[in-house]
Length: 419
Ligand code: PLP
Image (cartoon, rainbow, N blue to C red; front, side):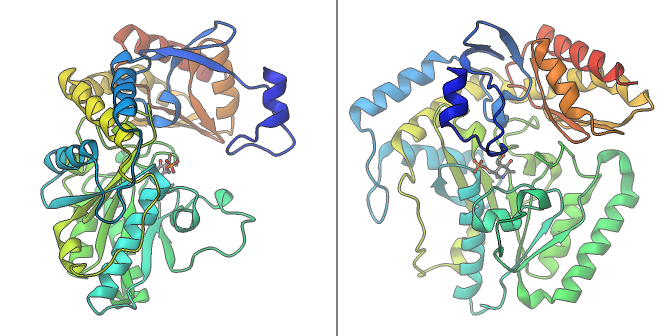
């Protein structure tokens, strides 16, 4: 099995021709997964942030099977539709911050980024401002890997070697850290004002940002950052696209992180926890103002599996679980417990920072030993994510208190031994 993996599979974000023996995950339940050898792991990352309701939900499998038997798929292009996607769109509008009255479905986050940016640019074109094509983003941002999404991404190593990028993206500084106080916010807002002045507001269509940087290291913004950004953008007529691919549906303790940070974006990108990853599903929520700007314009854009009925049916049942089991509140309570358990590490001389927002935790080391730490944690039954000097945790929202404590104990042990 392992040798066939190495022989036939090219894994995302892996080194070509240098395969490593894979961990072949076989099954999951709650916040745990088991590999084919029967070894159990606490899933400290829930794969790639997707699995809000935990693994092994037979209820979601049953919903998918029922929908597949009734109608596996039919296009939602033009004027075709299906009931699950109609119901899901209505549910999303009901859950979303006020003023986001329409939904465009996708299969994931990169497609969401493509969709949101194309909508924003087309809206400008439709209202007689075709020169507004520039999109502001931030360094450290991750918005996906497809053309426009890669250009929006602000992590340079993910773009190296792919040749010319989509143009018209300007990256501002990473909004680094809640511990950096109001001075950090002021500096970032001044930078934003200056960038708008240099580029010219008449050339800028939108700014895109993750409410909390995810891939960039689980970095919450400094106090007041998002409302400050919003005020500046509004003053210059620039749209705000919030990429909530990771944060929507509970991870920060709210349905949307926009609520937590007190912003009203014009477009919100969602995916991952929308279906908890049981089937690929994403949605872009579109503000009423953008819809008004586009009134009468054809949106020549769409992915074959837009509004997939199986994805929509599963997403509806998944949202029911999040609501019924109070998982937003659990994300807050367990996020605090996880952060409290790890924060003592910040006193170590070789640890630069421990930070968190709901069930998104980041630890920055002084050295690039994060991959080594996570390898040791995995050998001790805890999956964490590590790149360079940063360790990231984002367990399912159903992780239990004892499991949180085990994660803290294992991570702490291996971080301490670096000293
Ligand atoms: N945007 C953000 C904030 C993400 O974290 C990700 C993936 O992790 C994406 C976009 C891309 O999503 P996908 O891999 O589903 O295309």
